[in-house]
Image: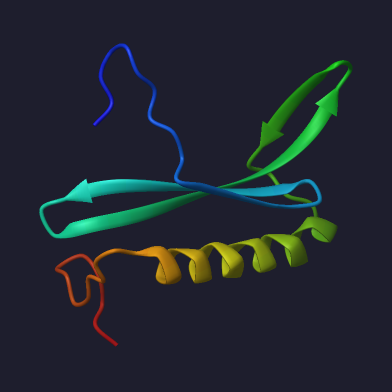
Length: 90
């Protein structure tokens, strides 16, 4: 758990071109859960910035990066949680 003096780091990052998925791990009472942030990185002058807005041509990479992140989470999850109250059970 992060304290005031430490910053929580992502457990994994995936990048395809300028699209990046950052995978975060959270411990809950139901076990380990993962969240994914997908961003587009771009350069503004000399500074690198990111955005959660995507253009038409970015969308195929967003789809691929989401699939790669999903695969990584399932391959690296220590505990698989299914049928929780907040998830449909398919």
